[in-house]
Image 1 (cartoon, rainbow, N blue to C red):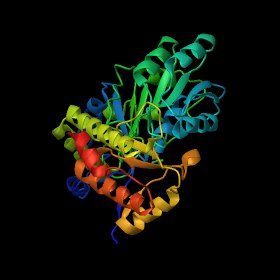
Image 2: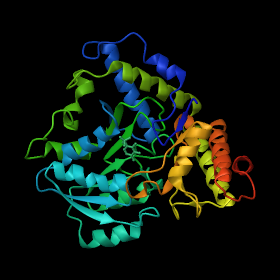
Image 3: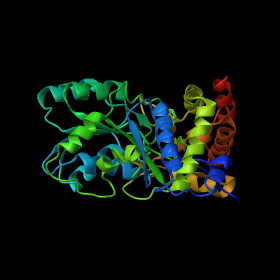
Length: 379
Ligand SMILES: *Cc1c(COP(=O)(O)O)cnc(C)c1O
């Protein structure tokens, strides 16, 4: 059977994006048109995430951006505040450690968004940190953290912020400038719906000043964000840029701008709201108590339904590859990534019908079907 994957990234890639990747290649080192295209693409991504800061597109999957931010800011001995209410959140501590920093991990309830008042209390007592890391949408649990409260609060204490917005940007407003985010990271394969392979990073003047003031040199060549600072103005990149990947992302961003940023976010809100309400009425429990991201929904299975068996039957009986989760949530929940191209009614109907029929086959007694509930809430 042909299988369809419905993951919280990588998402489906539209044909015009695939076509754009096969256009005549450009010489990214020599061709002034390439620099123009790169610069404009950075500005357009900036519009989507709400910033006038420079946005750099780096050759590598999303993790590259997270590590590049930590590599560029961390000096040996630096104290770094790691806000942790999920798997990607806690993961930042490793990057800080690798570059010689000392992570201070502040743990929060993993079933809801970060409680800013708890953070405020902590910072009142201890705020001697060069920067703090946090995740906007922590994808394994689907929690969306209030960057609009957290990042301005960090600024009040003079702490730079590094935000992983890989799973949120595009589908959720990030508002980098309004929220005063110093380094904001995204990737090509989530709501932007281009293939895996590119990271983007917006970097504030304050973040660059901090890098320039370092005593110890940045302990990486490839992940040195400072080396990108004047790259567009000087028409010189530290290494050759992957022009075909970037042409693909260019088209994916054009697709977003054509739909409209507000419309894109509205589509995510509508789809996600209807999915959550449908599951509630159907009798399944949403994994989180609050702080739901509109890019991914995570549900728990009822008593007597084994998640591993459900996922296997979805694949074998319906050709649907759904994702369990990772880390402490592995085999405990089922995730639906309705982001980017995957956030549409037709795809959701396929997914929900498949879940419905397999759950019924596994003995789940339901009062109505998931698809009808979804369509009812979609309005
Ligand atoms: C997808 C994702 C990344 C990129 O990492 P991969 O695990 O390699 O896909 C980073 N952060 C978040 C929150 C993500 O969802």
